[in-house]
Image (tube, rainbow over all chains, first blue to last red; front, side, top):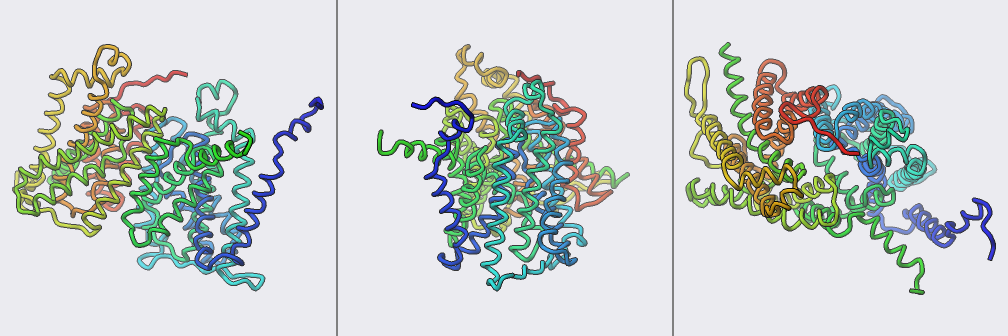
Length: 326
Length: 293
């Protein structure tokens, strides 16, 4: 029996080579999806990746910081329209993407100010108001929304001789990986811990030396940066923007994804995003059944498995950790 | 001046509808600490039930009680079937809000399935186009009917909460749940009754709103958000606050729509509440709330 003397030796206990290899294999398989999966999965896959970014953003806000926002559709619209106008002006894709995230993040930071005084339901209503106001502004100011025929966005030019849908899939997948990795790092850093502290008790967190103002505004800023990038990627994916796609139902979709996936869990957000994108695709002929299924999923999660899909995933992992010795 | 009175009157009529919605939301929030996002969909379901009865040639007097019963039953079932088990699982207030969103989605799906998404015209004995002139302003039959209905419903609610033993139990339950349980009040039944009453109020709003608009599965969403805004404006735990907030909101909105910009009418509600909440975080008539660490 060796004595554990250093932190490095302690880390050996949590290092799990087999799960890590399996995860890498899964990521690689998803990267190579265009070469083995059916054509139809590509566009769905791109949709899942872009949606997952927004859901992670929403989860950072609701799950980690405990700040409820019903105005996600507003940040989405800000991101999408910033991106759209920049792309039409001829700005390259990565720059426009960063600008879209930045614009939404700035707006989110501003919207965060009421959150310094408002809590729970009051904050929910204030953000709901932001969502409604943004929708009305885009619906009524033709200069922003491109008038009746909407805003057309130039398509992404594929590089390296790939076909367009393959190229879009790969680009979206890599952006998704980048943002997911950033989210994992964020939640295990000082910032992530201060978000959780503010969620659990903001007075206690303040007493422990967490800067409440900075943390709450940062939570709103980061979350809406993610949402803005989601909006931009969605705009690029659809190739066409209309204010109607940014109504309150869109904000509720984020909620469904976060709850079904699991609060305060990055991998849960990804699973939730996959759920909300893939379920409607399966029920193409029964559109009315989609909200019923979403609602039932929410009720089921809250009554039977409060941690959502990530909770099921966690339990499965715990079960198989010692398998078959139990 | 005539214009001003006309806008104010229209606003009061709209505000009385918001008040019905807001009263229900406050009733649920102060007893169960839940912001009920399914309020609109329960009301829509009740209104569609009334529509189904009326379009079979029955009178509104048959349809209205049936609609109220439908709404109240759904809300009560939801309380027993979902809220109680979720609370037993230790759901926090946010979880309960999300629970109501789940219910909203389910009802929405089923109303689309049952009645289709196309708008229908709701046959109603009071007409929108029949107007009387009172001095410088015009009043439609429907607006008067709405105002009277909201007044009667509000009065009944007042009598219920302030003048009956059941109302006393409701107030006790919302004031302090464990204490009420210790005193032998059947709090679960009382809470279920609150959910049912709130839903019935919303259905009244739905039935009186449907003739002014067209009936589709989403027609109550906008009034519900206004009702929420009004409830927050007045203070989420105060029933008089809900009425005051709704009337203020209705009039302000109508004046804004008339004099400034019609297309940004709905945004005003939210600008107004953010402004009020920044000065008075507990709403106009709400009590100062404290928090335990």
